[in-house]
Image (tube, rainbow over all chains, first blue to last red; front, side, top):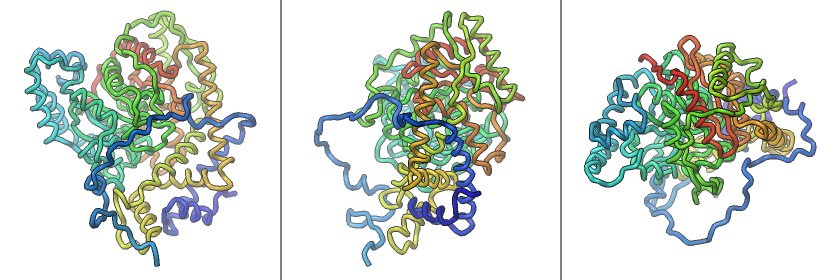
Length: 96
Length: 485
């Protein structure tokens, strides 16, 4: 039984802001299904009452003084922007 | 004989005595690149004009009486996911093909302060996702020991360039084995530091809780010096550790008497090639003769490492790579109808298949309804794997096993089989999940292909790893062999 459907792949692709052709959707469905199937071996483990580890070192809330510093020069910030005009980044219209 | 057959300390001495100039060192790099780069293809970008100009500047300084650090004038190659100011940084991806960073990574600031010379940027798997350097958008890199095999990955360019003698030192990054595995495949020394030892500021993020930058060199001593130069707390990386950096070179005493070695049975079991297993057993005999003792132990959750890793690393990657939207930097697709369409076209055209596969897996594992079953389960597994190591380190000083289950595989052999490719990281991944330091040093050959011995240490105990690795290296001559190109 497959764990992942093509519709799910299309939904996840939309969440990830990726677009796939029909053929690619097929391929990624097969790939993801195999990988998720492999990952399900973790179900063999009893993890009841096991706390999750998101970070290996025992540190949290690293604070620093809030000292204002200079921002980056505008030319630097725009240096790698693919499209810009009058000191601003240009994007396609977002309002109808 | 190449100048780079000298170790760092000797090169420094030659500079000091003015028997060699900085320009000579830089020439040596570009001359060798001219000779062999057509075969190896380790670099994405060379920075020759700038490197030669800097060499001239440093040669002028060479005459002054001012004290020069050990790394002064030394040529180095940098993995192309470490940002270098005004030097193109691509992550081997189309989406960053023309990205020209406006700042230097912390490790680059440290190297610039030490006055090293960047020869160029090294090839890798796209966004460091892969174990063979085959997923690079630009080209493949070829193993100097056998051009039909992969150099490993993701830091394949970093390991191949050092093995081929194009640069004496390089930096790589290791998320699931990406320094150690290519170091093993290319017969060089590669160390993944303890998580937090080296600042990640300016390392293009793949999986933030696992990534570490580390050195790749021809011998252990050079590796220790290079790690020394790049380590330390960084205000720009709040996950860098506020822990003193010891003098690593001082730990190279050549003495392993009384050292207690643990050898996990899972690291010599099923799936590990016999030649690999034998090379590790031989290495243990060498260390035993020098006064160390070893015992078999178990890391019972090892086999779950790969599955936990791919869920966690891909989840973190799906979040980290959301920044590539075609707006502020990087590739932007043409002819988009609206903003969402622009994101989708840009990302679909800009990322390769392996990157898309991981973004999809990560987005799925984090999506509503699946988070507990996959992401949280993997985090809990991570706790169990970390605990396995803690238990062993209560009684032992280091853990030893192979770096990879086999020598380098053929180009094209695994690229269409993601799961088998992933399984190849089984011996390196648990180390990242637990945040431990680990090194790969040359320990043998199989049909002319190098094999690597992995030495894993306690958190922030790179000094002991280096001591063991160095002692082993001095007692053997695997590291002295060079590929014929």
